[in-house]
Length: 525
Ligand code: FAD
Ligand code: SIN
Image (cartoon, rainbow, N blue to C red; front, side, top):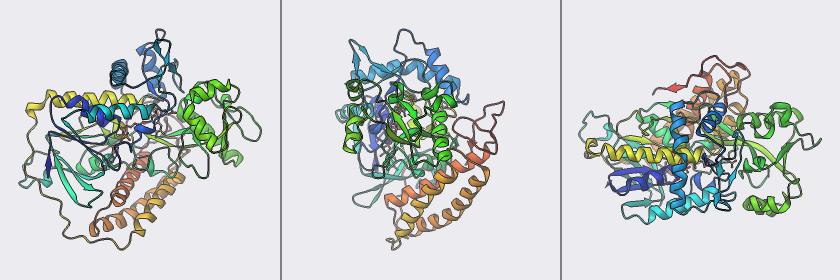
């Protein structure tokens, strides 16, 4: 067993922000599955939204966030995040993030749903620069221990105490050391989940391999409520390529003038769907692309920015430009074939403005949460921002309530005495593939009750098989992830069946209208 003051699950924007904010006060352990740079943070392209322009106001950013979110957002959360955004950007600049500049001021790009230019960015690879700066700061702090290669399995709670105290507290996590195959308990006075989204529950996703909703599933199993899991965001423009499956083409391409066209007729179709055309919020553009593809039996649609100055295009999107050249596409001269793909998990573990979950001692921040910021559809570039604001908020609350946080009791070690090595790994591969395929086909951009019920039926059958497997065989990262993917799929489908309207990202042919009141889908374990 290892003991620190605070245990953080995740080394992306949310986890590292919290660790850095805590480290002057206490000893922090940051656990990550695989590499420290393996989360979505390192993959972020477009940038971070903040009101920094003289012509822009907090009110504008709040309104844009609420409009994109279909009114399901909690206004106090939106205000909290938007008002803290300039400070978050300042902190990143201090940590050395080399944001693009226009003379002395930060350069602001534009994305769908934003009424003003307000996205700070580092070319078209903002996430990599942010991840690098946060890691460098964390690595330099003597109170932060970074431990990659640890797949957390479950939260440690009352039932794992050697002498049951009845406190209902969370004390840390059991984690599989991916190198040795041993499971260790890591305990602390407080635990922060910053484990990212569940995008890999879908066959096509822009998210990295480890986005399997582990934190959401762990919190749910431990007794925390989750909310709005039906609100899965699909990005309209993921590259269509038979070899490169999940390469995003940033929304900033549309922000800088890119237009969507039918690949056969060349018709610019977005104005037919929405007056905001290519700069409508993501749910609208993703549905339009999906409609064009299904209506005409296409494999993809075209995103075209070749009418802009070639030096501007190659200079503004250097990474995308280079990547596409290696695939034989010159985006300064020809259109890019794109399709919609899962991109962001708007729902998650319910938290308050201090990052507190329902469970004493358990905090959460970032994509694994439902803070009230995104509502029914996340506004572009509000996600990294949420990580910085809530990573810091959770840290602040832990520091302020330090004296009320008990030290951990003795915890039972992980019991592997009744399991053996698997001789049927095929079960894992089969189920992984199956979940992702039926979630894409039955619980995708456009839903029906019948398809959701088909998905639910499959989940019920698979749950039995996966739990049986989990009970008999030694854990591996693949098995941990499969169990969590299935749990997240169940939460998504249950939430989707519960919502009897079409709002934001949840669009169902059986209930195409909006109900008069916006109500969260809150699931209670
Ligand atoms: P992540 O960065 O995903 O980190 C999760 C961490 O948790 C990782 O360290 C992972 O190893 C760890 N973890 C997960 N499970 C376990 C486990 N069981 N045990 C131990 N560790 C675990 N948002 C924007 O605002 N602007 C953008 O421009 C933007 N572009 C994007 C582009 C792409 C391609 C993608 C996929 C997303 C983009 N997003 C963007 C969304 C944004 O990147 C993410 O929402 C955000 O980075 C999430 O940060 P996080 O800290 O919550 O989680
Ligand atoms: C993008 O660059 O299009 C992604 C931005 C985001 O997800 O916020």
